[in-house]
Image 1 (cartoon, rainbow over the protein chains, first blue to last red):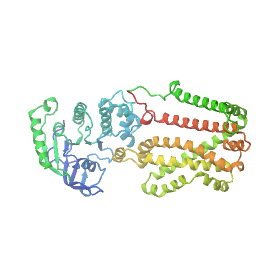
Image 2 (image 1 turned 90 degrees about the horizontal axis):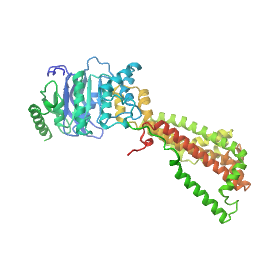
Image 3 (image 1 turned 135 degrees about the vertical axis):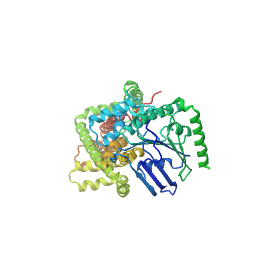
Image 4 (image 1 turned 30 degrees about the vertical axis):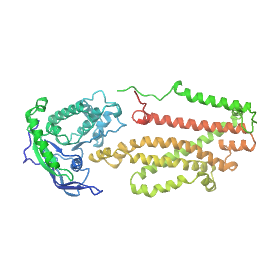
Length: 258
Length: 267
């Protein structure tokens, strides 16, 4: 696991006074200040409808704030492919094979054909789908589709991975396994993660830092650093420290929703 | 992984509709014989079959002519309709300005336009193609436009995230997403092109090239050769069914690997 970034580390993403109002007049976010530090796993935790997903879209540059600023300072920026995004749904191309779906970002970035094949095969292996290269999404289970989606998000070797409640629709067994796999990938590759969730336990188990958002319009109302051992596993999951942090986070969340 | 899916083929799938057809024909033949209906009112299926064989030398070239007109009209509708759909899908603004014109073209009955077109276009065969093409045009435009605009929004977001060009978005997301809609439109247009060709030919009448199946029907009618009229009608239906089957087969070929419409449900 990469060393925990201190509060003084230069952030890769800096949101200042961000407000986002939809065309319909609903204000999703107001006065949102948020820093994302390199190498951390930051969870955005909050009640549903608090604008967590909107914040993620602003970070990705898929939406613009109606007020405030969003700064992206990704090291070695080449503009495209720095950010990977995993949506709530797998969002795969139903007409393409697993390999074709994983290779999409590389195709778009104009990677040479031979390199695409090798890289796609490597990614498919890393998410445990070897043997399914030629399968279409409809032949896969929900968990497998999500694995394809993760492999695709990692295809262009992003510096920043944005995850929008990626496993919300999955059963708990699949969800736990995918969380562990994602954690292992993060530890091995050292990218930065922003993870949107409404599960307290999930946020504590996965993150190095948790930002708690208030109800709509959302802004950060609390922050919890998670002190976890280098290798999180069953030990940490059942430890007193984990439980203690969960309680602390739950308390702040309850306050935020008041 | 599941086993490969097949076009529901074989005798098992063909048997029920075939049985119904045979029963229907038998009842028809029985009724004609029992009530002794004169052949100039309603000939029986056997008499029609005989007429079909008898006038095959005249009907066969007519069938080819009508099929050629239908095919060329369909091709024109696919190219122009598909092309227009691509233009319409570029912006809502263009779609809103041009689409109503396509609707006007669609709701105006082709029988009403055909006489005009026959006056304007000197080459009768070309006029027939234009008539049939107009009828087949709209489903291609409407369906393909709908398909191009129905791409998964998250996939479009993903394309933006990777800074994909307009062409890349089209090539990787919009075009494949539109394919099922396009093929649905093609099946409708295929049938409509045939109808359009026949209608135009009927309007052209003896002033036309006097060589299509519709003209054979008119001609047989003038001469009160009702069995022959039915024989031409049978050929026309058969052509329509074959066209539909061919387009369905094409649709299955292109979609069976991934689209829900072409996948057999298991379990």
